[in-house]
Length: 485
Image (cartoon, rainbow, N blue to C red; front, top):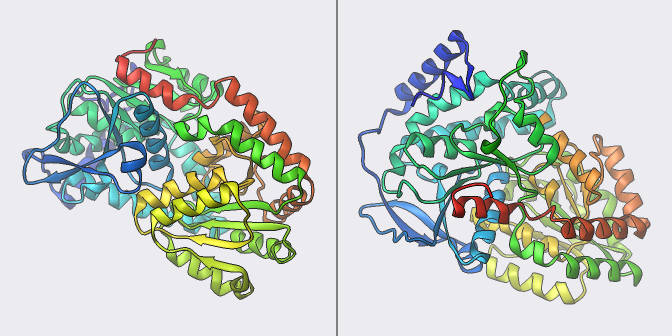
């Protein structure tokens, strides 16, 4: 089926369709066409999360070795930033908790296939754009913000992606056509459908409706009621034209995509935060660097603000730079005063796990920095650290939906703005602090007034009780049952 000419019975303009065809041809000229090649798949225990969540990583190999059965669930994704991996981990965790076997299927990791080459190309551009947007205000205002809020919103963008996704199908050849397939990025969902898979769930990120994320033929899941309505009506996806809506059985609001371990730990984690506040123990701050490695400048300001509090024993800081060792080196270079309090933890996920267990029940002081070369450990370390933290400092990307008190700093791309709005309305995070001065003022308030963190903990517990954080379970249920219930 040619999915580039119509989107939910809404016709794509002839010009937009021609551009989509030309874009596909461009990639064929650049990377070739491997549609006639057979890729054999094998399974390996996934690094870091293999033991914790039972995840098996699918790799290309010389022979077919995957042992799929009725308990197998594929989690399709790409690495573009950390957000899509984070969603995948949450869904894999839920699948595992329900007694099923999650298989990790990362199109980006198949670097010998055309799909991996195309996605690597796009990821480089996206990461570069994210970093430039934080360094050049004019680029951010005139190009990056409009692209990420309005450019990706248009149906014509979906048409182009659908045509390109036709080149990503060869690696799906050995997957059973009816296997539950949950995609944490729309390219994985689109490619799965082009490859003939019949049970595809498209787990949409963020809180802003964009045609970029549509994969007609899949069940689309979203995290909030407001974005549900935006997608259902395809609001603003073709200028002022009122579009035919998505069918009711194509979309469902599930709640936030959160890992089983974090959902089950909400009450205990919040109780410990409140106890630390009431006993005047050092406030624990967790600074998480995003997958593009942007926002170093504001991190420097925030750390500089915290150092006097760390010196007095009133605060402690955890820094996870993911796999961006250069960011950590730059922070140390610009803030030599932090060296006195800094502990650099080894690139060893098992030791990171052990450290988190120790501080969960114990004490914490100084500054602790973590960097893991393995992408699985780089992303999942934040999940471990947030349970032992009082406040997470992050941009309003996928972490904005997580059940931990949050100080939300300036976004990277207009699509992230509504993540901060959602967090502020739920009550588990601040509004978006759009400048360094605003973020520093919020940090000062939260550091010196315990009531903000306590209130956020109470809202988190209420949201858990209301099922706000049950999205990953719901997504898994839809895929496993093969339909919306």
